[in-house]
Image 1 (tube, rainbow, N blue to C red):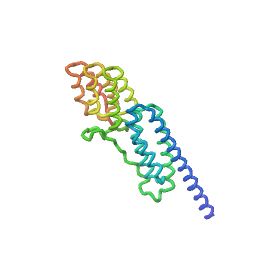
Image 2 (tube, rainbow, N blue to C red):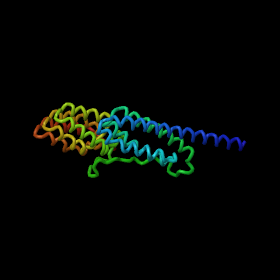
Image 3 (cartoon, rainbow, N blue to C red):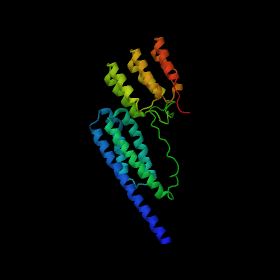
Image 4 (tube, helix red, strand yellow):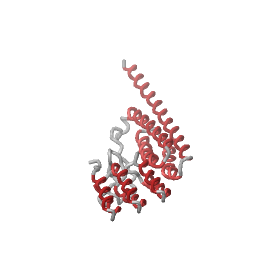
Length: 248
């Protein structure tokens, strides 16, 4: 029976390697689709994600499909995907999501084949945080397990809002749309909010849109001061933030 067992084991390893290679090719194809979409995307999208996506594509060409290399590429794409969801058309984020799904399949199969040669395969990959400002105490906090938007995504959001000024309602709509898929720190909100001055009621609307996505609402107690001397709008903003909780 032993020869049969060896043949069966070899067949499983070989088929897993073939499937893993197919997953890697699918990921490469999705990255090409993403880059093609980025070429026709707005400037803030190209500036936010193109470099990271092209770097991931280059790494994937050189990778030997080991779990550690594939995980490194996957983490790079996570950051690009967060930024794309904030400032890029849906086609870009959809292609990047397809690429991450394909890489997940390749990583899963590689773990089974190389478990005995990769000591850290069973350990979860460390969370890589793209901190927009090292002085921000909320940078490494999470809400619903999600980190705040990184430097490129936040810069893209700020640039988009500035570009829409002085049209206050389109400015507000940009923030509301971005916060559908993003999280932010209290310091990021405090940096964004002054772009809406002196329009106090749209400022309150922005606070209410962002408050549920704050990773560190405990650090947002001073945000309401940005709405002074308008006492009732300031209190409204303070209440919206006080009602929130970040992850433990």
